[in-house]
Image (cartoon, rainbow, N blue to C red):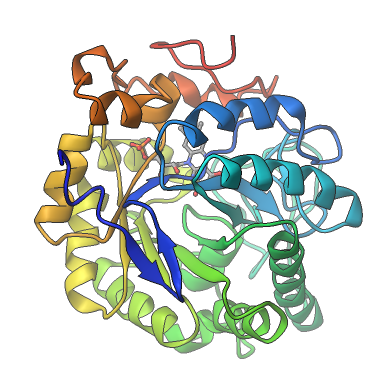
Length: 363
Ligand SMILES: Cc1cc2nc3c(=O)[nH]c(=O)nc-3n(C[C@H](O)[C@H](O)[C@H](O)COP(=O)(O)O)c2cc1C
């Protein structure tokens, strides 16, 4: 069989993934004004689900009002959100992929104008306009509960993998990072304290949700900003998370407010290299991501022992049939992502649906 390592099933928590390929979470501006799943969102994921992707992690989904990324982001904190997710996850599962979803709160990186943002400390993020307010101690506890309630709701709707977004400068990353957390209570100070909110979320999810739920934590392996988390700290963070209820570490990097550095690091393969270093340090599965545009590249990463899963985002915007074409030996027919980043137009003021210069993803 071609791509033997890519196509090798793997079992986590008694659940067998059909292969090692993960669609990385992407926010695509296709939810409705209430943050509900739309038919257009289901249509967006359908070709990926039916063309051989092992797992699909649906993009950033907010566990609380005000936590979403823009006005067309997904929410999962109210009964009205459940029905659409049930349809979406059923569509994915029926096509043989494992349904997953990322839970994320923007914190001080809110792109909706005029909102007072919440964060571990009242420090604005560069380039993000608006007031930032420090979460009170009780509000931090409430936020932990909200992540756990959201996970429970999404599990009931059919998600089998939940990813907790601790990366890219969003709320949980803001707690972890010394650059954004100056709290004086037990949620600030040393690394153990800065990780407390995430560890409590993991514990609360495990208390509340069926034990078969697979939890991934996406981390920023290096923030590349002053006082930001270093790779060495991330090795410790990854292993602490795995000891405390996480099943998988998804190694990304960077922060949204330094997006130029983040995109360059992706192009330069820095997160892939970091995944390999973290993989050596931890006892648990790792997802690698960053400019993987072919199954050949995914196979190389797995064969090198640098990860257990390989995630792709933009390559699947360029061609949702990348996997099925490659498995059929039709690699030359794949529309290849050219790393132009035009898809990041999702964060322009009109919040348009995601697009790709190589293929109109929504025709
Ligand atoms: C349009 C778009 C939306 C994204 N949304 C998210 C998101 O919701 N959550 C997240 O953790 N990363 C998000 N990302 C980052 C991707 O998951 C991925 O880490 C990044 O694109 C690098 O992988 P690639 O080179 O395979 O595209 C997004 C990327 C793109 C292009």
